[in-house]
Length: 244
Image (cartoon, rainbow, N blue to C red):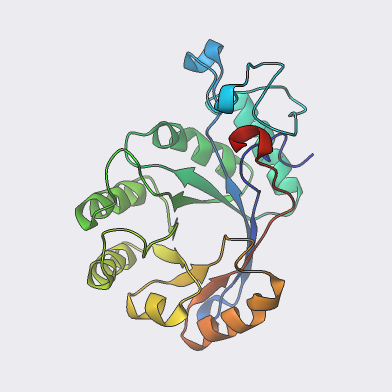
């Protein structure tokens, strides 16, 4: 099993990243990765396994039980094993879910980076819709600088146009990120808006809204605008036990 239980709450979405720019005529296959899981022995409690009233370790918030059992995403041995499995599957980039500076996902990020790079994998992050504070322009500016300091070269922004940052704010953020050598991809099908706001590319993530029939049209538009295009597919998603 590739994910060893990482189908727990979200589909593992594979993105075929087609690079349009002639100087980088290459193709990455990326996997969205969720370092959300904790156990009492390492983290003080069961994190995510107990969602929706379940009682781990036998009863977990997932329709799939991981072959390695419930695990901690802060365990270096688990990270090493998962990264070996991902690399063996032919994936080239791990996109780690990230919930802001100081979040559990941020604290685990250095270990995730180390484990990924040990297997020759690139490491990117997906900036999620933070709940502890709003994703303002100032917050994102500091977060992107922090991620750049950690050596992150590519960032995926989930629902960039749903929050308080206007297109002018994204233009400034993207210009600053690109000055640091970072690529920033927007989760949107609005290629024109993403290009105008200075994003490096677009990705879909949403499996229901953006199915296979949309990929050719979307990527053709993205490439014509000089943007990266990462259509997403999912091998399975069952959140019944996690969210009802």
